[in-house]
Image 1 (spheres, rainbow, N blue to C red):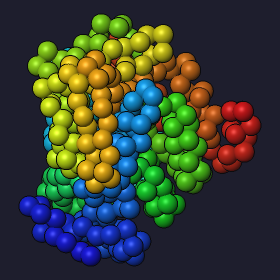
Image 2: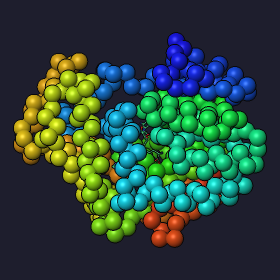
Image 3: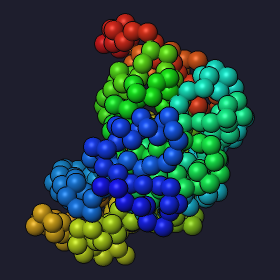
Length: 363
Ligand code: SAH
Ligand code: AVI
């Protein structure tokens, strides 16, 4: 069904995945803006409920980080990026501002598909570089957060009248089948969001992405580089407490959508960088005993005082290891852009002609 996106530009329609393919083709040739609702777009209900039941049944307990991003979570993440301690966004934006034109020179006039695009703020550097070279740009942002995606599409359409924008509201992988249809393409994955994957999920993601791209397509990846512990610990423990609100919002969302009845004043944010694993572990610690309900599935979980629930990991990278590892999935490195402190890197990769050789190198 087509709905007008509530409160957004009347040009934006929301549609089910079944209508996506033909609309995509039409829109890419005639222009227009749409949000395609993928199968895993969040329905206020069972996907989240099953994920919470599965995660709270694990030992140690953990929750899937994609559920941090409902309307409120996306807005809180936006505030995190403005905190003085959270250097990632500012640093990556600077690298993009300095190098977007060079990136466009290397890739040529490819379609831009952005995974985990959020409010697409940094992407504007790329859109401007593309529009400086051609009258139009095709941009396909992909995000689970419908609120952030709609806001991004609305802003981009108002700012760049000639841009053809199709938002995909769902999991990253739902966009993979589209990639062949829109090749030549550059997949953009910013913010070091790849660091939120467990290593085995990252490997699966990279292998699926490489095999969904056509030879000669590009992949632009932002990674946060390993650095002094104090700098990273501060970024995930900002003085204003915004990151703590972000963690707490996951439990507030459970209260809103799953009737969990959690006392939010008992939820403490605990984030610590482990330099041996190059990883920040973010937990919620329960200061008091809680019974957590998941009403749609009729389940409850007792969490003792001091009980910990892992809500997110954020891995940090070393370029010397990261670049060869990416190449092992079937990419060749076109360029690596960093800031003057070497805190963050943007890696521009190209899909190689054949995947079999890289598969052999990886095993
Ligand atoms: N790229 C932006 C936003 C990063 S925050 C930046 O660099 O600032 C991570 C984004 O990924 C959020 O907008 C979140 O909604 C989205 N996201 C998280 N898990 C996702 C998933 N499995 N599929 C699609 N989007 C996801
Ligand atoms: C989206 N992602 C890369 C952020 C990060 O830095 O790992 C999420 C975040 N969590 C707490 N602060 C920021």
